[in-house]
Length: 130
Image (cartoon, rainbow, N blue to C red; front, side):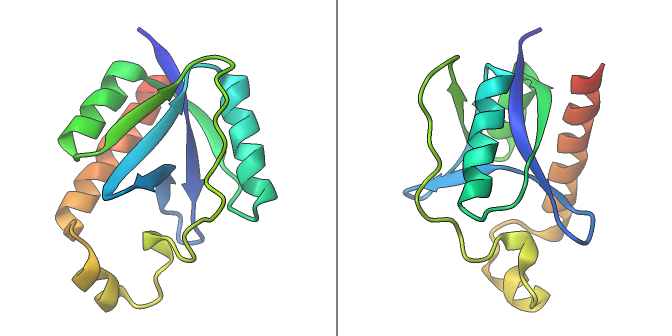
C-alpha cells in the first residue's frame, strides 16, 4: 500500500476539504510522495495568507478512486520535485460562501453528492490512519 500526503483544511463550521488547484477548467488534487515536501508546500501557502493546512497520509489507490469517482485529476509530486503554489488563491472558497443559495445555484455538485464525497474522504482519512 503506497501512501501519499495531502493537505486538508477545516472551516469554522467543522467542514473539511482537500486542497486542490484549478488548471484551466479542471480541479487538480495535489498529493505528495514525501511528507516533508507536503509540509513545505503547506508553509508556502500559509506565507501567502492562505489557510493553515493539516498534512494527512492517504492510500494512493483510494485517492485515485476518489478522484476518478468525482472527476478530479490527481497530481502526485515526487520526492524533492519543486512544486510551488499558484501566486494567487481564490478570494473565497466554495465552503466559505455566505450565501448558500448562490453557492447552490453556481455549484455543479448537489448537496447529496457533496455529502457522499465528504463521507468517502473521511473513510480515506480513517484508512490512512491505520
